[in-house]
Amino acid sequence: MLGVLILVVAAVITLAPGLGSLRTRLADARPGWLVLGGALKVLSGLSYVAVFRAVFCRRMSLRLSTEIGLAELGANAVLPTGGAGGLALGAWALRRSGMDGDRIARRSVAFFFLTSVPNVLGVILLGLALTFGLLPGKASLLLTLGPVLVAIAAVLITLASGRLAAKAQARLAERNGERAHLTRILGAVSGGVKESLVLLREHDPTLVAGLVGYLLFDVMILWATFRAFGSAPPAAIIGMGYLIGELGGLIPIPGGLGGVDLGLVGTLALYHVPIGEATAAVLAYRALALWIPAVLGSAAFLALKRSLSREAAVLSACSPGAEVDVIGRGRVRINERTVA
Image (tube, rainbow, N blue to C red; front, top):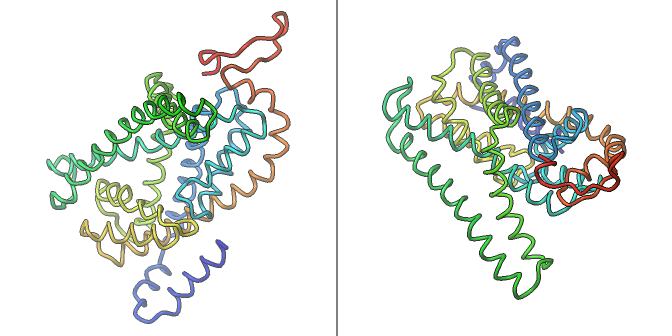
């Protein structure tokens, strides 16, 4: 499916009238910058793996966490689910190895929240810097201070949703019991938000570096693809265009194809980036963002089944409340502090 969609886009660019300048610009790409963009995508993927391991199970081997993380990225590249497809695949892999389902649900919420934190902070910091002229780049207050206010509201709504879910869970549990389906969903939301805040307060360097790297390296890919076709806009403009334009990935199209492209190009155009330059850079960026995770994710998924069977005991021990055999101590119950 991914290959067919890429071929359709390539055919439109090649054959459609009125796109001659874009075809010329794509043909003149400097390959060294595109190679750098590919390397940055790999680094972004490894940063994602670091976050996955820090959130779900720090006892997990680097090999298994890499295989699950890359397989998730591959699923996100081709499935029209706004990132949920990758998390579902990871949840399947962890559950198959014996990790507690409630923990998977809570940590999936925490993972989604934590990987959104750098995006929100990036919008706030870049928006304020552009508003007060601290970084080069020109845009109206609507495009600088406006996103800042939206980002702050998103943080407040997320924190409030955790508290509201906890209260609703308590009321439903009194009527329907702790194991009712809706009660468990609300528990996952409230617990996930709470556990994400706990993880942030721990200041784990692996988690922090992974969160920063996952976003920063991906933004730098767009910078590299701009350089592949000429000069690049100011870094703050690229960053704001990326952070806002990537919302097009929530449109249910495989890989966000079309939604992300139009979102990025349109947003960059609003920030006064010439549309021809933006289109060429975004198309190259999207090609790297689709193909590299798809190829690496496919290879990781094929290797995943063997790794899951080898590490089932380790993953099941990551769940608080689980009991494992410890030499000299017999059966020991794992608590949250032990798990990390």
